[in-house]
Amino acid sequence: MTATETAIGEPDWRRAADLVEGAGTLALACHVSPDGDALGSMLGLGLALARSGKKVVASFGDRMFEVPRLLRFLPGQDLLVEPAAYPAEPELMITFDASTMERLGLLAPHAGKAGELLVIDHHVSNTRFGTVHLVDPSAASTTMVAEELIHRLGLPVDRSVATCLYTGLVTDTGSFRHSVTTPAAHAMAGRLLETGLRPEELARELWDRSPYAYLPVLGAALGRATLEPDAAGGHGLVWTYVTRADRAAQGLPYDEVEGVIDVVRRVDEAEVAVVLKEDDAGGWNVSTRSKGVVDVARACAALGGGGHARAAGFSSALAVADTMAALRPLLTPPPSHLPPPHPHRTEP
Ligand code: AMP
Ligand code: MN
Ligand code: MN
Image (cartoon, rainbow, N blue to C red; front, side, top):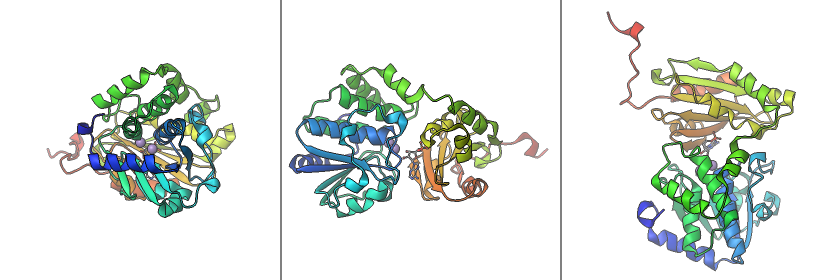
């Protein structure tokens, strides 16, 4: 990524670099229930800084502080501390892939008390809740912004740092399949591969392994998938859910069901796909995906969540049917996409 291609101005890059270079201790935090981009951007920059001699702590504000099994291969996890051990009033706090202060969970109060708060993100919905912002909505992943900051700090990207950065890039682009897959995204992948990282090893960790117990849980979820051709303004909705009882019956941890949405979203007859996932405490996390007509970020934001136009989510305390009743009417295409004509509805 070059400066001309980013939405971030030179003064912001300079202020960010000055803050990082001037700080004694750096307190890093990514969004709750961290994904590959959240942990990848935080640990990638964290490792690069720690190797340059900086004192770095990193965390995320989940009550159940645990790195998802899928991401335990990431280097740099020795930088992680539990939220309870996180500095109460960090001199400089840096947030990753979090569009709002609330997405920091238990660490939001720490951000509120930080001397300086550097926000690194790529969500178009970012509320600019910091004192300095490196927010580039045209970046495919937060790791793209992190990589540029590493370069501007003059820090080397070795294979460990590259593994973290590549993980965010490859997960947020859906393995270079989504519309955010720009020439800049591929150029960054090329640079990272120069370090010797093995993309096939990463891909296997991220997508090509599950415990056997996943198969019956996936089967149950797929077996109750519902197609609603008239929903989403006539563009079609497919949805299903995974209960904690489904998982308990097989001894399957919550974070193993992240991939269910990737199967459900294949359905040709549906513009929008939704998977509701019940966590161990009985709350629901809802994943939504669209093929480009319906802005699911807008729908999810209206229900207290957020994300990107084609991939977004929210949390719900309601029962499955009630959550769907709240979501369904929000899945509307823009006026330029009138419902496709149904033959049985046209006037003779
Ligand atoms: P997921 O379905 O969990 O893979 O999330 C897809 C996208 O939606 C990611 O970019 C998340 O950052 C965003 N997202 C998911 N859940 C929430 C939430 N509760 N609040 C805000 N953004 C969310
Ligand atoms: Mn994320
Ligand atoms: Mn991201």
